[in-house]
Image 1 (tube, rainbow, N blue to C red):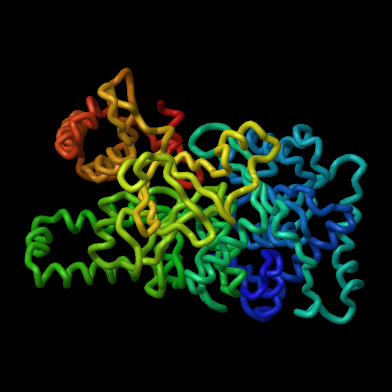
Image 2 (cartoon, rainbow, N blue to C red):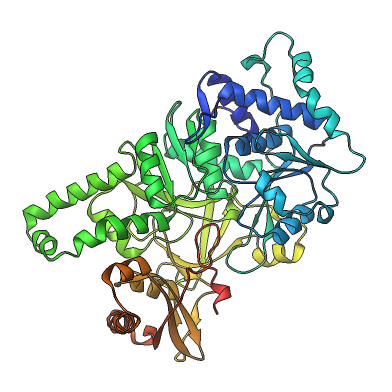
Length: 551
């Protein structure tokens, strides 16, 4: 990472890893070397030039994670245009709005996503290109894209008549203070806003990862997080390619069973995961064993417990491919019980904290220096302060400034003004404390905090973390209903069905869970009732529950 510019990182990586494998669609024969990626990027640059795309123009990108999704992204940012990655989970109306609000003039889309959109609702779009092979799917009346696309190969060979080699890769450099990505996120508080991310924001994240994660050329990475979101995009994709790694892209829903098989085949050097995946693997693979009477007895014997924990650690390590240096959990808080167990068995894992507005990292710690229940140490390119009379013991809003902080929200001065303090610190909306060594400890979201009748601050996430570890509970949400704390619970119906349990039996167990929970929490945190919920709660791309839908 000798180049001090985001775009130049990829010029250098493409040149020095030209013959090495770069991107593969997992489970298929589609693979691109770094040289082939550079060649495809150059063809798209020629297309942009022929179509008079200007630096700073917006190009939208939507579809499942694929090699060509990555190539479209890289071609856009290395050209100097602004990429607008859109999560395919958004509904068509939201997609129309984001494309129009961002003023995108080109769209790269999967065929299935394009089928759900209506071109008459996208008046500024000049052309739409398929993520299958960059074929033209649509052009606006008066455009001549249909004539340019068939000529691309000839135009490329005319520009490079002999061959295309490392010496031909030259990205003239896009200043790091310019917007490079417009990232729209629904978050947990309502309608999405366009986060203006610069090359400098991304470079801050990648240079930190380079110094900390230690990936090397030809290391293997399994990419399964949404690449339209900053967490997966920054580290599974951009950082990995800037180091010359081989990235296999899992273009399907990352269910635990599918993931374990892919981990076994790819054997990744670094595993990036959201806590939900770790928690599901813990609940399905580990917890049932730990709850057996014989296992509890064995764990009470000092010599045996270390042997058993070593076996469990090996089982979990093998489940993630067996060759990783680190598992990084980020994107949402990690359940405290799961975290305590992973620490106890000495699994090599770490936790980071960030947000889209920081592209995304704010704090992080490797397993060797990680303080349990923290979110790591504030990055050296960032500053953090706690809006509290005593930031070491009394939770207050976490506020940040530094290299990774966005410019603001696109075409939304009011939202930008509201998210920054008068003296220029970004309000995260998270509540937490900090210790003398700059480790951050999160208590909850300021918007989800409940004020009790007696004036006590209640953090529902802390109650939910305890509730989620009780029998037959898949996930929960604690809400305030007229001064009463109610727990909405989505049961683990697979486990319920396997026992042959009836509805009345389940209600009895939930009453027992309520009593158990209330014995574990403060008097003002006790819940009045558990209400069964029929479906999984609706979530954001980071797998945080959209709390505002249930209050």
